[in-house]
Amino acid sequence: MPEVNIQIGGRTFEVACQEGEESFLQSAAAMLNEEAQVLSDQIGRMPEGRMLLMAGLMLADRTAASEDRIKELEGELETLRAQPQPEPERIEVPVVPDSVTETLAELAARAESMAANIEDQLSEPDE
Image (cartoon, rainbow, N blue to C red; front, side, top):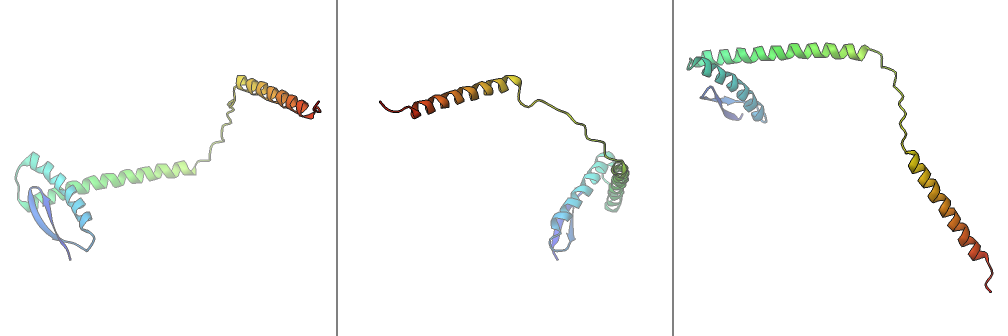
C-alpha cells in the first residue's frame, strides 16, 4: 500500500492509500490545506487536531452548499425538461442575392450562345 506525504497547514503527514489513489489523495489534501491556510492566516498557529477539525468542517460546509446548489439546479432542469418544446420558428433568409442570380443567368446565356456558335461552325462543311 503506497504511502504519500501531504502538506496541510504547514505540517507534513504521511498517509497510506490504495494503489492508484495517490493523485486523488493529493487533490483532497490540497483542498484541506487550502482551508487550513485560511484558518492559519486568520487565527494563527493552533493545535494540529483543532486545525484539522476546523479545516474539515469548513470543507464540509462548502461541500454541503455545493450539494444544495446541485439539487436546486437539478430541480430547475427537471422543470425545464417537463415543459413542452416550443414550436420551431420558421425564418426565411434569401441565400443568393438577386444580383448574383442575374449575373449567373447572363453568364449562362453567354455560354449557351458560345456553344451554339461552336456547333454552327462545326456543322458547316469545309470548303
